[in-house]
Length: 120
Image (cartoon, rainbow, N blue to C red):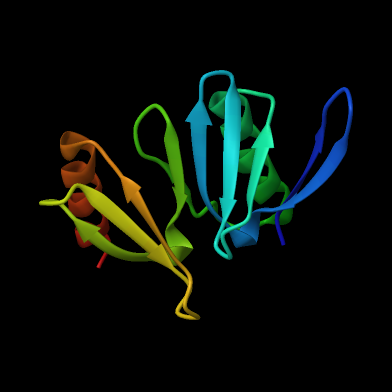
């Protein structure tokens, strides 16, 4: 089980990465979006979070399911349900009624679709 202990000036937060569906950047902040819809904002950039996520999975001995889609988004591929190149969206879901739709640039979504297709 991959977890991150995020420590800021004012708080310490334990993040269970196996339940995080998406990580999105907004300026110098990063939003973690859980599959259940809960959101958490961290006062650090997405690049730093990306490093922490990769290190957490290396430490746990698991392969990292997160992939970076552009400058401002990382998704957990364990929740991938649909890639729609016409609408330029990726749909994540847990087959328990929770869905999350993420807008992705056309060039990035096509490359990601081809990458997923080649894996199967």
